[in-house]
Image 1 (cartoon, rainbow, N blue to C red):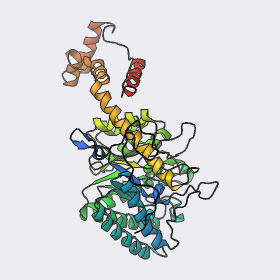
Image 2: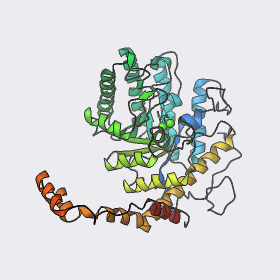
Image 3: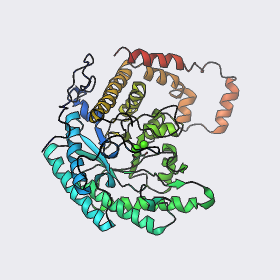
Image 4: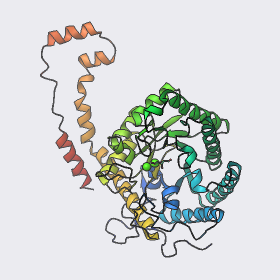
Length: 440
Ligand code: XLS
Ligand code: CA
Ligand code: CA
C-alpha cells in the first residue's frame, strides 16, 4: 500500500535539546513512569473529524487543505481515510482514535444504505486494529449537521427526528462495540434552544434523557461495558445548550437516574466558553466521581467561540494533568485531540507538526504535574488551610456530633474569630507553580 505521507517518517523522541521540527522533545512514548509507559498514562487519541475530514472550511471560505485522500468516490475516500489515519497514528505513536459515524462514512441515499456502507468501513477498521494494535477510545453519532437536526435530535419537536437520531445512535453503538471502544459520547450540539418563545424546555429535557436511557439499555444489552459520556458545552451552535457545564450535567444525570452509566468528557475550550477554567471543569467532575475522558484543545482568550486549537499552553496542560493524576489517571478515557491545525496551516506536514506540539505540551504538563505533586508544597498548603476540620469543633461538625444550638453556644462562648484565619497566599502558590515548572 502506498504511503500518504512519504516524506515523513516515524516521529522519533529526541529530547528537549533537539531542533528537529519532526521530533518529539518531551513525549517519549516508551519512557516508563510509575511502572507504565508514557503512552499509557496519556492515552492520546486522534479525532477523525478534524484530522481526517477538516479541510479548513469556515463560514467565510472554502477549505484550504486537501482532505480528499486522493479519492473522489465516497466509499473509496472513506477507506483511504482509514489507511491515512492509521499511517498518521503509527508515525506519531498515537494508540487511539475517536469518530462520529459520518466521519467514517458519509450519508447515502437512505438510512439503510448509510448503515450498510458504515458497516463496511467498521469491518475494515476492525481489521486494521487487529493488524496494528491501535484502539478505539470512543465513538459517537453526528446528530447535528444534517438539516433534519435543525431543531435538535433528542430534543427535536419532531418525534420522527428523535427516531432517526435513535437509529443513528444504535448503529454508532454497534460500531463502537464491534471495535472494542470503551466510551460512547453524547455531545448535544443542537440540544438546546434559540428562543424560549418556541420551546417546551421540560419536554425537551425529558426526551433527551429518554434517548440516553434507550442508548444505555441498548448498549448494555449488546455487551457494551464501557462508559457513556456527556461532553458539556454551553453554546455554539445553539444559543443555549442544555449540557451547559459539568455542574449542570450532573444535576441532569442525577434527576433522570443516568448517573450510574455516564461520566464526563471534558473539553478545554468548552470550559472556557462556560466562563470556567479547564481545571475547574475537571475538578468538578473529579470531586463528584464523574471524571471520564478529555477532549484536549485550547481556545483563544480573545475570541468567544470554539476554536479547537492544538494545545500548547503548558500552564493549562499542567493543571489538567494535575487533576487527571488526582483522579487516579485514565481508566476507560484518554486524551482525545479534538483540535485542528489553523486554516492557514494547510500542508500535510502541519498535521504532524500540530500533533507534535500538542503531545509535547501534554507530556510536559504531565511531568510538571507530577513534579508539583512530588514537590508537595501545594498539597501541604491546602491540607494546612483546612486543618481546623481535623480536630475540635471542626471534627465534631463533620462527625455530626453538634446541632445548630450547640454551634451557637460554641460561637457565643468563643467570641470573635481571630485565631483560625490565615492568608490564602494565592500569589505565593502561583509562584510555586512557576518555580516547579521552570525548574524541570
Ligand atoms: C464540538 C464537539 C464535538 C464533540 C463530538 O464542539 O467538540 O466535536 O467532541 O461530537
Ligand atoms: Ca469535543
Ligand atoms: Ca469543540
